[in-house]
Every structure is written in C-alpha cells, then in structure tokens.
Image (cartoon, rainbow, N blue to C red; front, side, top):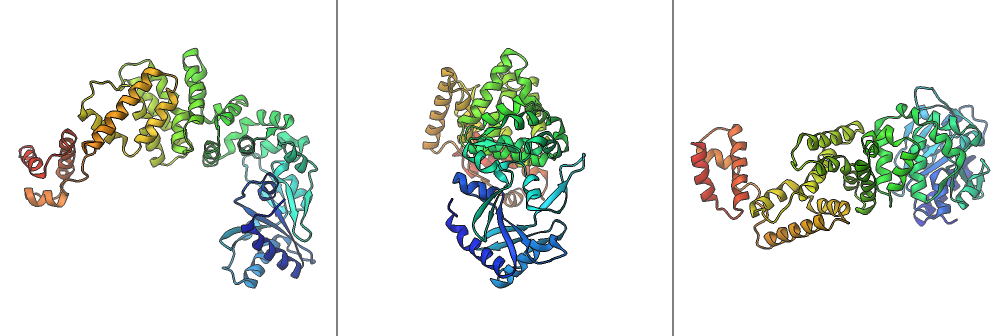
Length: 450
C-alpha cells in the first residue's frame, strides 16, 4: 500500500497537526480502498475524533480544519455545521473533514439523520465492506471494523457492511443498488450472493431516490469499459425496468429483442463519450420503428424520438444534452436512407443537419450495422462523397454571408422578423451553391423581398 505522491504532503500535515492538538485522524472511504486496488482516487475524506474531553464532538472535524488552515496559512474552510463537516483546499486538493457518525432513516427519504457515533457505527453505516476501511494516521494502521473489507478486496467481492441486515441497508438507501452495480463494473468485482438477493428485493424503493442521482450513476456507468455488463445486471435485478422501461419493452417480441441486445452491444462498441453511448443505448427504440417503415418521417418513427426525449427529460438531462442525443440518432438513421441518387445539395443539407457531430454519427451507425454489409457500403459511399465535396471546398456554407445590420441598410428596412427569414433564405441559396457571391444573393433577395 503506497500513498500517491500528490497526497503525501497533505496527509503528513494532517498527521502532524492531529498529534499536536490531541486529535485522532483517519483516512476513510474510497481513498483507502483505492490504495489497495492501485486506483487513482479523487476524494480524500478525513475522519476526526477528539482525544480530549470535548462535549461537542460533532464539531471535531470543523475545529480541526480551522486549526489546520491557521497553521499552514490556508484559505478558511467551508463549514457545514449542521452535518459536522468542513471542506479545505490543501495543495490544490479538496479535503473533507468529517466526524464518526451513526445514521437514522425515515422510510420516505434516503437522506439520513446523523449523530456522533463510534468508529464501529461509522463503519457499519457505510454501504460496502470495501468502502468501510479506515487508515489511522498516528501509526498508519488499517482498521477493518467489519472484518470483511480486506478479504473482500483480495477476493474481488462487493458485500454490504452488515450481511444480516442487507435488505435494510438497500431499503434505507436504494441508490446503493446502482452503486453496487457500478462498482462491480468499475473494479471488476463480483457481488456477494446475499447482497445481490437483497438488491433484487429492494428495487421497489427506488422511487425515493431523486432522478438527478439516478442520472449521475447512469453517467458513471456509461463512461466505464463495457457498460452493457451493468445494464444486463440492472435488467436481471428488475431495476432497468424502473429506470428505462422503454428499453426493456424492446424485449417483448422476437423482432424487438434483437434491438435490445444490439443496443447493448453498441454501447460497448462506441468510444467513451456519454452522449454517444446514451445515443447507442436508446438507438434501438427508433431503429425498431425505422426498420418497419420505409418513410423516415412516419408517425411511428417520430414517436420513437418523442419517447427518447421523454426518457431523457425524466432523468433530468439538460436540454443541450437531449438535443445532441436526438441529433446523433436522427442523422445516424438517416444514413440508412442514403442512395447514389443523392445530389450534392442533399449531401450538403445532410451535413448541415449533422452540425459538428458527423464523426459521432458515423461511429454510431457503424457500431450498429457492423455486421450489415449493405448499410456499411452506404456509410462508405456517403463518407467518400462528403470527403470529395470537402476537398473541393463545396461542402460547408459560409457562416452569415450578410449580417442583419447590412441587410437593414441595403433594403432600408427596420429590424424585424424579415431579417431572420432573409438569413434562412440566404442559407438555402448557399446550400444550392456554396460558392455563390454576395452580389447574386442580393439580387435573389431583392426579388424575394419585393
């Protein structure tokens, strides 16, 4: 176990200051776990206990952070007195100081009430044994208070801190189910049997978790290698149907089952990009309709896009994220409509509709149709034509050929909706001929405006 170089000085300062001021300091949580699995950790949490007879033990972490800041001339800590925590920047690293605590849960919330507790109570209130190891800084000794943590890391197992109360642990905070699946994927660990059964029986409690927290866990899964493994597990424990029922619905018949399995393969095939991988995960929803309708703009296909928008809104994704996912899926499917009869104008219009995402669109299309020679041929032919037009400087239109201010001066008209309409007209003219001159555009506008 080796402390990473960037943390050696920070931990040294904390250790010295704790000894000088009668505090016990422990590195806790994921940082300790990551030391053993040789993984770079992003969070440094320090648990502080006072050796002195201090009546207000809840303030131990806060008081220690203030002493530390004063000793090393650091910016004052950000204090959260209600929770007994403080955050302090040390050597450009955010360090959180906390107290050992025990937790009490309300049935209708995953956010616990906290009180000062013992080291044992703090270990047991954590989710998994591998995350409940403490590193005591006074002698650099590892405390494994659940008695399972070190062995579980060695044997690559994810297990709840208290196997006798596994169901309660997940019912108190059902987000732990998603975390177990995600950490299983991250570390290449297996989930212990009792823990896995408890996860299955607690999925109905997901309703008390905010959509934002669910979204964040999905994002963390999507950036891992082979995220399909996590989605397959979520499906097995019946949690995927709570989060993405529209995707699970694809398994209802033989035809759409292929779209379900194919979408999971696509998520693994495309590069590590959250937008692209989300597009891959949801691609089958629209593709299933597209395969059964020759008309790209049929009501069924459009309803597929509506479904995707509803899914992403439900999970509280930003408007920009949603638009980007829809753009990638829409234009990837549109490649399937390509034929050699497309004109150069059609190619330019398509590229314009792709925005700056043609590379991601191609990648999604190829990942989905990797085994389909006919569609791959379309992708190659389209890409070649795009490259050819680009080489001739005939692919992209010039941005804002004539400004709104110039239009007002030339046509002696006040500002109004007509300016945007005129710009749209100019864009259409440019799509027809990217090399068109300003003079020709103005002559055409003159007829249109008059």
